[in-house]
Amino acid sequence: MTVSPLDAGVPAATATAEPSLWLKFWRRNGAGYGFLLPWLIGFFGLTIGPALISLYLSFTDFNLLQAPSWVGDANYLRIFTADPKFLQALRVTFFFVVFSVPLKLAFALAVAMLLNRGLKGLPIYRAIFYLPSLLGASVAIAVLWRQLFSGDGLINRLLAMIGITGPSWISNPRYALSTLVLLSIWQFGSPMIIFLAGLRQIPRDVYEAAAIDGAGRGRQFWSITLPLLTPVVFFNAIIQTIDAFKSFTPAFIISSGTGNPINSTLFYTLYLYQEAFGFFRMGYAAALAWILLIIIAVFTGISFLTSRYWVHYDD
Amino acid sequence: MSRGSATPAKSLAKRRLFTVGAHVVLVAASIAMLYPLLWMLSASFRPQNEIFGATSIIPSSISLDAYVRGWSSGLQVSFSTFFANSFIISALSVAGNLAACSLTAFAFARLKFWGRGFWFALMLGTLMLPYQVTLIPQYVLFRNLGWVNTFLPLVVPKFLAADSFFIFLMVQFFRGIPRELDEAAMIDGCSTFGIYWRIMLPLSVPVLVTAGIFTFIFTWDDFFAPLIYLNDMKNYTVTLALRSFVDSSGESDWGGLFAMSVLSLIPIFLFFLFFQRLLIEGIATTGMKR
Image (cartoon, rainbow over all chains, first blue to last red; front, side):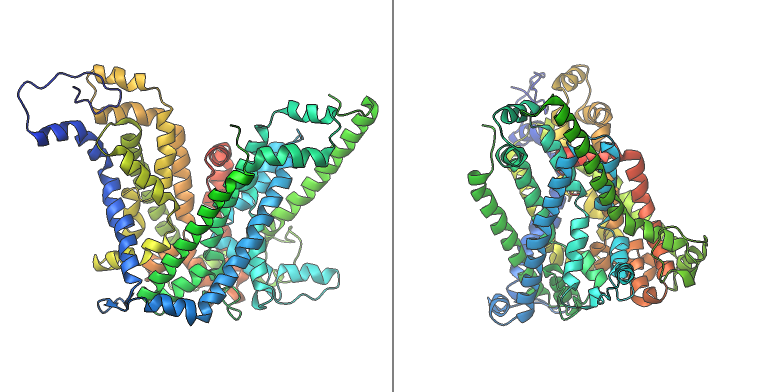
């Protein structure tokens, strides 16, 4: 019988007297729970507790000042049947996810493949492409983007040099969201690094064998590179998609928190923020949060279920 | 190493052509990627009347006016306060995250206790949980504690290891440290805490540095939590101040705004400069988001 908290199970001196059950439990588990204590407090107080309370709040009317009052499924009913802003927020967010994630990953993969050809200067190129990805999430870059795509911004000045008069991109509902997609694509650096690491795992001799069998570059890409890289593609796609669903700051900065012009940049999280902290409809916002959780969970679940048909694992 | 059936000479020429072409594409792409950043940098050094209309990245004359103007910001509080606030919050967050996550990770990676698998599974489960789901009750909690408009809601969660990603990162690293080391220390009479403190932590410097840098960058960049918890301008972080700046006077003073934006990026840029290899390894091996 060991009382050592270390997993290795180094035999320790057995207790002489017959200790109480609690003392025994404490001796065996005390160290473990001692180390776990901060996390346990955080887990119950900041994670699982609040998550359950927010589920409860989503069935209530709650404005922060009065106690929440139970309204049953009224919040969800209104969200799904009578809330055009919810639909708009979904449209904006899905548009953003559907365009930014594949384009970003396509750029990341294309550049990674080019860099993986044993070119000189790889560390320099990699650093340059990575930098926007590292800086890109900051407010400073969102501020920069707001200037670049404003009516008299840099982009329009460049266009003017070739005789094109550009619109005010960020205040035009047709283009505002696309500038945010572009901002996201600009940050293709970190998935590129993950692709590079994945490409290095593919043995050279596979390509040599394929070349001897007469496979051209295109054929090599579709039959070797892509299938062997699918686990990395899958990983990147999941991470980037979840991140895109949760995107908040750029849209907030570029639209001054409004989601305008005419709600064309009303990201889901921005709408949730407005409901919670603009109108103090906390119960309604909690319902929106749970719907977001379910959307992300369903998406992740479907991805994992379908992954066995297209993600190629070694064994 | 010729490919396919092409003759060696032809293949060599093709290769050379490919290399040149690839460099042309990559250099062009690099310029396009960096151009906005360099343009902002140069705009911040231009005299006020020169920012508009300038497309080149080399200013004709260098002026620090924008930095002087921006620093006092036209808001009631100057940027020295905002930078100090951001530094305090980020430094405390790093300390909290490293302490709490390493304690938790040590328990999961090394200690044997009843329910370990259960708690570990729950911890992994929270990795996927979007923060919006806990947002409102957390806000109510911190508000009832009287913590709104203090740094506590931003910092205390870090001391309670609320970011499970870093726990996971450290568990992976700790598992790679040979168990013989703790066993030997155990036999020599080292306490459990002693093993954590004198053996695990000193051997885990790489993962601690990686986690510390990423915590700093994420906290430094964080906009959402300061937005909802800090209302008094004296407590604003740099990110909040930039937002107020752009909404109030920003459109009329791009120079000052760019100058402060550039300054706000410097800490991150320094990490990039000195720890680039560590950051890139962190991303390549763990899929860190940035």
